[in-house]
Length: 241
Image (cartoon, rainbow, N blue to C red; front, top):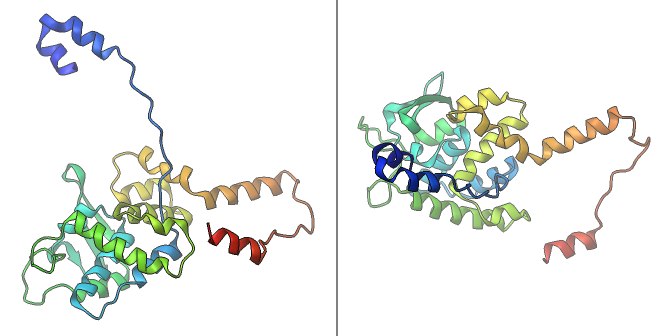
């Protein structure tokens, strides 16, 4: 409408009335993420005895390690990696902005097992047909490993996991480790620190720590207070819901 308002002056009044309509307020849902032990359980569910399993293991490790967008990971080529010290990967993100992320030694080992040794610079992650792996393909294989990991987990978060949740999980883990928000912004490739600040409001564990510190600082914490523990009957009842 703003474009038409500038280019079609004859109907400027109509466009102005449309622009005057107030935008509808949308509900901002909390960012969904996995705790570190949940993310490790999903990654550990991958069977690395087959080439496809080694590909999946390397991909999930890379997504969680770097917080990369799925589109960024699927366009990676061996030339974007540095597997010797300092271990790192170069991503081309939104707006064709480049950023470099460090790699864990476990991620490097997993990537070495899937990169071709013939010196080609082809895409790293492909389907079993040899075609580029798609976003839907990543979502499918992640759901498969989530179902496998959920058998030994009681967490509700392991029921609906998307590939982008690994990006959120990486951000929250960095935040829990005490990393500054501006550093996390650069790590994830956000354009603004406002986007990264969403994870502060999401992280319930940090809110509990702040509340405990405030409670003690205010002098309201009773001495010798016992921590509440749920009974086995209550846990059994909740698991049946």
